[in-house]
Length: 482
Image 1 (spheres, one colour):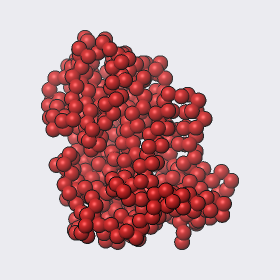
Image 2 (cartoon, rainbow, N blue to C red):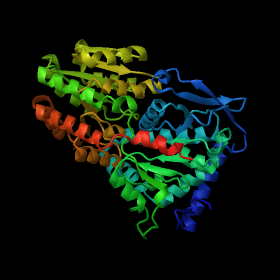
Image 3 (spheres, helix red, strand yellow):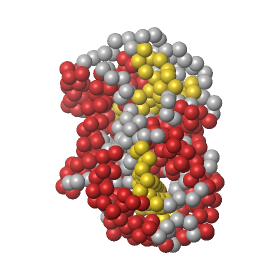
Image 4 (cartoon, rainbow, N blue to C red):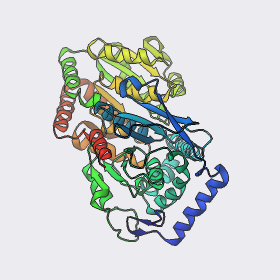
């Protein structure tokens, strides 16, 4: 059955199906059609996070791929922001801890192919939209929020994506049909199904059900109970009719997708946080900049509020710029007086890892700024630094689901709002603080009142005991079922 015309038994209108076909034809005209190109792949050790996660990168080759199907898992993903890479690393970490070799299959890394050409163009548009949304209130209200919360929610959107991902199947030819395949973005999942793979897990992000994330023929996993119910009945994906629900075997609740090294150290890391709290050590904040590099003005205001406490050694700040060096240049222009208390750490991932390890039990003060041009280092540095922080300051992206006390700042896209709702309901993070007044109030509470931090740490340990953070392990277990 054509997945662009019928989705879980729900027929797409002829008009929308035709639009999907026309859009795919446009991609072919612009980027070509290499479905029958016969691409081959080979595995090379990941030079950045390979020693932590056991990752083997898949790259183009002249010879067919040789792979051990019994002890391997393919992790399909794309770079679009940092979130999908972050989930992929969590799945790789869990798989590695379970004795498997994770193979990194990034559809946006095969330069010159139709798949990468299409995805790169879409990623550029998404990043541009994210940045504009933080500079223009009108654009954010009238365009970006509606697109990210309601536009991607429509069943018709999935129809168009299904036709588009048919064009990406040329890269899947080397994979055995029954190889365990976990996709952390829907496009690799759809491509895998179109290519005939039979053991596909579609690792759904966020906490807001959208038809964008559907890949019929795969097992869909979700992180929250509310997402499970919303996806099960395809809630709101067609405003004009009630839809047939997803079959039971197509949707599974797993819990949050968290790296093994974070889950296994929750109690130890919380004990360190509480010990610092009791000893009066500087409160440690980790401020992260997302994959689109937005929100610079808000970050500058947060840093400005923390500066008096940093000068008095009552607070310390770690900033992970990801791969957005330009963001720090913008922040420094807004805060020209911070250079004297700032230490910059650039493009030395080994040194970053050593810093994070030493900070677990060592002293920390001042401002430390990290930046890595390598995407793996840019994303994974947050994981390493997270264990040594007391509070993570982040927008409610995939980091909203991580087991660390969190201050949730303003979202970038309507779909992110529900990540903050999840954190606040669990009590392992704040509600979404979408104004500087709210951010300032929460910062003051976290800085001056030990009750809030104790509350979040206690809720993290309670959630762990309930299996809330075991989602990555469960994804791997589902992928291993044959």
